[in-house]
Image (cartoon, rainbow, N blue to C red; front, side, top):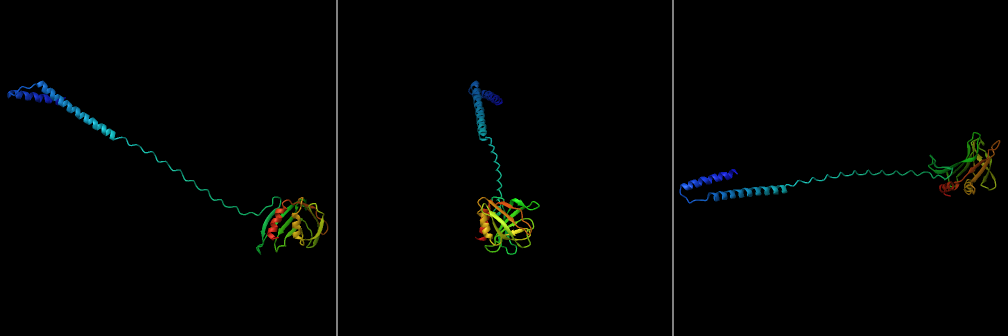
Length: 237
């Protein structure tokens, strides 16, 4: 608005001066209106240009998109430790037999031994009679078939032992006797094989001591077949 007034004022002075010099008459209103229109158009163009530039700048300066946060990697699973293999155990018969491998510390010869407590029959302090088998310490025939009675038997002498395999007839043979144990030393393999063939799973025995007889021992030999097979393999029968 101030620019418009200034222009009008200048035009008025020029007209006055022109009149003094006897210039041709000019229509003041038309001149003023023309100047005002030019000034208004110029102002309008300037404003439009500025607004356009501002819009372009606003369009150009878009807000920067915030990047999505990087996903935190899951921790790597710790590998499970490798299982340590169990040591090979001595084969155990599926019964009351107690079996193990034995190594002679002097010769490194390995043998197999199995023992079984009597279901009926014990010494004077109540310890059950013990049937004991093993094979083979020296050579293929050196097996053991013995009974530990847990009481005095003899002083290195032979004693009579009555025995019975299952429901077979009773038999009698001389066994070598120590203080508490009797050994069948003549027919060890035969005794073990006969025991393995028991049909009803029962073995019965009684020993004549130096002055009396032992009690009667009765063993349930269920599982003897597994024991026999291990002795057979160890002895190479």
